Structures are given as C-alpha cells and as structure tokens.
Length: 475
Image (cartoon, rainbow, N blue to C red; front, side, top):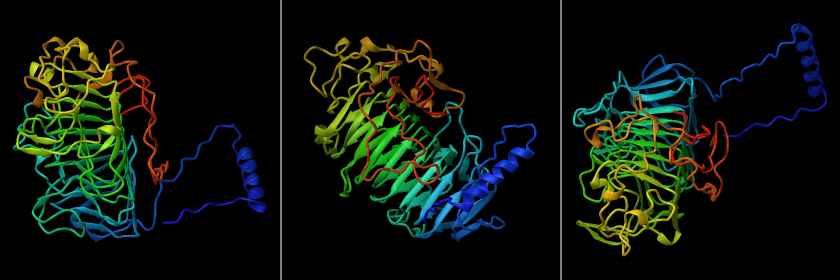
C-alpha cells in the first residue's frame, strides 16, 4: 500500500492563501473554526447488508454493525480498515484470517467490538468458569497469517474468542480440532501493535505471538484462559515492549516470554509498568501461574511492575526437571530486572514472591525489601518463610480494597467497578526506574496514527500501569 505525499507550490499555494482570506472575510465573528479531520479509509466500503464470509477488503465504515457467518479473509496485499464504533458480530465459530493488513482504529469515544452476537458478560465474583461464556470460545479469532505484514489494533474490544477450529482456515499454525487464540500473530518480519484495547476471555492464550516487532501498550486483559493460558504468550522471533497494561484474573501468567520455536531474532521483551491482579489461580499445576515469566532462552527487562495477590511472583526459569516438566533456562545473562512491588494477603503467596526452584534473584530495589524477610543465607530458589511481609506495602488503590474484597483470590477476574489507580500516599509512587528506554526494535516500529504505534511510552517513576501523571493506561 503506497502513501501519497503532496507538495504545494506556485499557484497551488496561492490558491490556498486566497481561500484562507476568503474564509476569514466570511467569518465575521472571527471565531476559531476547527474542521474535523475525515476518518481514515481505504478502498470501497464493506457492504453490511448481508453476513460476511470469504474475502473482503476496503473499509468497515464508522458505527456500522457487521454479522459474520463464515471465515473472513483479508488476502495478501489487501488492507482492511475498521473505523470507530464498528461492531463485528460473530454468528458462530468463525475467524478473521489476516493475510494482508488489518487496521482496527477505534477511539476512546467510539471503541470497536469483535465479539459473539448478543454476548453477555458474567462479571460478578464467584462466577463458575465451567459455565462462564468468557471461556466457551463462541468464535475463533483474529488470525494473522505468516504473510501479514502489519496488524494494528487500537481502542478495540476483543471478547469471547478462542473457539475450536473444525476446518482449519487458510492460516498456518492452527490445527483442526484445536482451540485458536482470539488474537494471533506469526510474522517475524511484521509489526503487531495493540494499544488502548480490551481483551476479555479465551479458552487458552488470549494472545499468541510467534514472531514480530511488537508494541503492547495501555491495554486491559481480563479472564485470560479457562484452566490454562497466558494473556500474552510470546515465542521466538519476537522483540518489543509490553507496558502500562492491566492484567487481571489470568489463568496462568499475565505475560510470558519464550524463545521456543527456532525463529530469529532471539525473543527480547521489555515488560515494565504493568499491573498484575490476582493472576494464576485457574492453572492447577504447581509452579505455574502468576504474573511475569521468562523462559527458554528469552531475554529482556522487567521493571516498575506492580503485582497484587498473584499465585507466584516473577518467574525466571532455570534448567532441569520440575515436577515432571523439563524446563529450559531463560537467557539470564541478558535479563535485567528490579523496582517491582509484590503485595500479598496470604502466607502461601508470600512464600512464593521469589518462586521456589526457580532463578529469580532478589533485588535491593524490590518491595518488600528482600533482606526484611529472606534469611541471611538465602539461596536462589530456596524455600523460605514469608510471614513477615504479609499485607505490607499496600499500593492503596483508589477503588480496590486490600486485603482483597473477596473470599478467594481466584474470584477476582474482571475490572468491573474497581479502580487500580494509585492513591495519593501509595508506596508505589516514585519507586520506579527511569534509567532505561523502551526497547528499540530493528527496524523500528513506525510511529503513526494509522500504520503503527500511536505512542511507545517511556518508563515511569511510579510503579504499575497507572502513574500519577496520567500518562499510562487510560481505562
């Protein structure tokens, strides 16, 4: 897709000047008249008079609803633009297969929705995950093929996906009779940008990334996975940043980086200024589930994160056999971390702030201070007693009472009416590191309202997704 640049010279400039003078003369009150910019579009409008199936391209026009009755395909070389306020309603277990380019460009005032027809949330605590529609896979997913060069998703709700593929769509990586992912990207030379969006529910991983340059900023992830799955499961060939996201109620980890898969370049992910709330409780396996995970040769940094009542603290995987699972070590030589706060209500969680049998090293910038509860002879991965730090360093959220306002940590899965912004006297204020910059990918992710990242936020001096200068998550 070519971009057009216009040079205004000679008579064209004169004409513009004359028009400006005329406009001023006609506007007798000298009001400051602002003309709104037209919405970005390409090609012809997509027809919504009948349910969609098969190949489409062009523009889904603002505020229209589109029913989907079969797999939809954006062919290689084609572009689909989705304008603000569009609702894409899946009538069954169908997918959006993106071989070309997808630009889902919602706005704060008019977000876009990809969800099942007549979808209903079950957000109250104690909802049964065996019957919750969030985990039933009512449709497939937005599936980027290996030829997809660019997937941009902004101010968009992706809800209730992850259904079983009965007949594999024309997209590599999803086998028949397997659950898909609500969002899937797999081009190591492509760009995946997810900003200011909401991902709600899934049967397994809500998002699976098999390579690419990624920017995942200021999003909200709720109910990620039924009995397993990371909200963000990242494999080899992937580089980029995950920052200012809220992860709440994920089955396993909120965000995981792995170099598994044999693709280049090496997976290198910076995870900073994220908030993880009550994650890891639908994954029954010991040692699995929590907040942040680096394994299998992945590298990067994780700083300024805020974790509350997660099953395990950040997990840096070492090699060996762990409860019957053969684990492969992270690239600890090229992994740096610190300035993270972990609040816990229960002794079981306090005893896993530094997960036993893993390689997470205590840092002097951590909260709680490691020397305040770890024994003097503590060895990385050893068992310890964390009773001294129960309920310490309460982040003082504006709208989420701690100790937790539920009987079980597993019952907190959605944002609902909670507010995870920091109170004025929160110990998380001013404790972040700003001594590093976001990871610069090669080549760089373009900064663009339509064709790349709106913003790649730098680290904040405050911890978590909601810094007090309001520069982070806007939900």
